[in-house]
Length: 307
View 1 (spheres, rainbow, N blue to C red):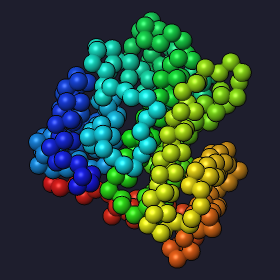
View 2 (cartoon, helix red, strand yellow):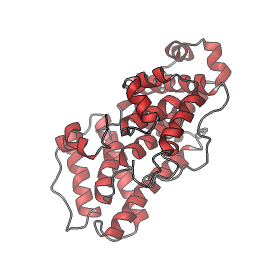
View 3 (cartoon, rainbow, N blue to C red):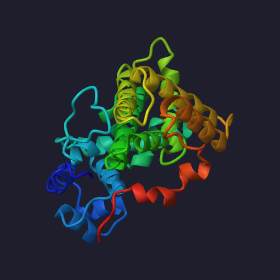
């Protein structure tokens, strides 16, 4: 997290999020994969949350990473509508748990194959409880989509907030949103199913275009930053963002459907960046798959964890 964020802001908001979600510190520590001592130190401001921990905390409590950082992160566009930090009513936590279970099942098996009973079993509640929170399966899918959108933008802010160089930030942003790197296959499955549903005349997914616009604005803002610093080519940043996001979508679909392998994906994306985005003075050689996916190589860019 950058120096622009007051050191006391994130710990205090983290404690507020945990309390608001009705979770114990032990349960949160388990969700983050750390011991309670480390969590206590982070909550008291004696150590910094890592990017992975920020993402896990936001997912477990239902808040956003942007909110945890004080609503000041510059690396992701603002959401189309404002939302509360977390649900203050007793329905927030079970409803979120159901949506997350549905997200996993829809992503793995598809909308048509998943039954309400399957979601109930996965979330540990009864089928009538599902209907108490969601009128039908379509509404449940919408909630799973909302979770997917939140996860994507939380991941961007958690992992990109410390990267000042626009060229490096754009490359990492594309990595995070591609079928490689940290994005799960199930998340892309949700996107593909959403796009298919949007082609139907009776589609009710009216909010999704706003979420996609937010993603496009994030890419556009990064390109504008790079143009100001001279590491990106001049041109219409909106048009450049549209072309780049469209290319990523198309290449991602080819990878998921087995039409293209990951080596070719990396090569095509790197070639486009060097040819159309990067200034000739900073364009890099074609990246290998290992450059894109090796966690060890990426670790130097992550927020350092103190003991």
